Image (cartoon, rainbow, N blue to C red; front, side, top):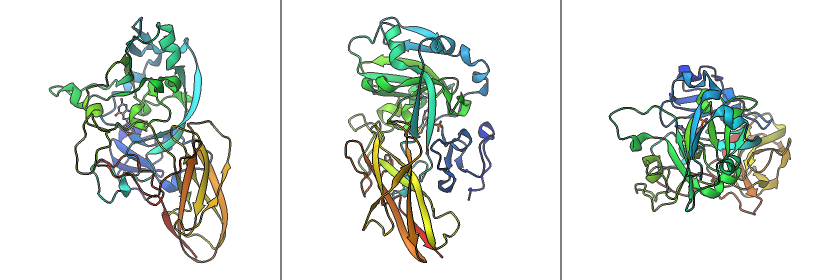
Length: 366
Ligand code: MSS
């Protein structure tokens, strides 16, 4: 059930029955609300804003939005209209917040206690970043990172570096990245980063910069707080600092959506156990389900089309269940053979939780 908080006005168009409203800037999809036909509809997709979203007037004339491309041989500003003439690609991708699953950390790190719903599988259309780079003469020598800057208006009288949403990723991530203007077949909603969003497939959500106004190829990582000290895998009890790994690539993960703890009691007999599985930076190869808390595992079957390396796959395992209590769990394996671990990797801010044990659920069959 929803916490009872109403949808904030800028996302009043979301489905109130599908969302848990944590705060005005953090909304997650209810576990039982995830459908089984792969794509997460816009009105069910989670929201995470590090800063309040810019005024909705930025989507009044989408084609006129400008991005400054820097760190290329011929740096210049480009409008969305110009970008649309430079190339087109469509990619299905799991958009997942770095902190998805934080709610399962017993250490209760500060930040939103997301369970499974700060994630969705979304289709993006836009121009490949590599086409833009090529058109502008290639990256300058010495480039090591691709840095995206969000178009929020920054509060005055604060050091901009302390709040600006600006993230750097290794330059190799450019290969599959897009500057996207469309999401699930419609112009990207303002709340999800329209008119233009950087999409970095296989990386956690924070790296996919909404309302992007600057894309730079840089020798160093951004010195914004969100990059320097934020989104770092810090040992428990320690503050973030640039010597620690940045939260970038995602690893194999899966979870069961149905039957779920918060859905109606399950009737004894044949039950279809359903969920999602993805590989993160790699494709997902398989997923296993356990109904005895991880003692034994059975391979589940993928259902629906394979939308590529960065998408998730829906899976199902039919099982006959007698009345009783069961602990259901699942674990994914990626194309390189990496298996979703039993335990989370402890870190101070509660990032990258892909522990299958944390995502297991107790269900009651009557
Ligand atoms: N971008 C910008 N510009 N701003 C902000 O705030 N956030 C992040 C990304 N991007 C931001 C951006 C995050 S953090 C996330 S997740 C994402 O986004 C979300 O998305 P949506 O659309 O869902 O809201 Mo965590 O890692």
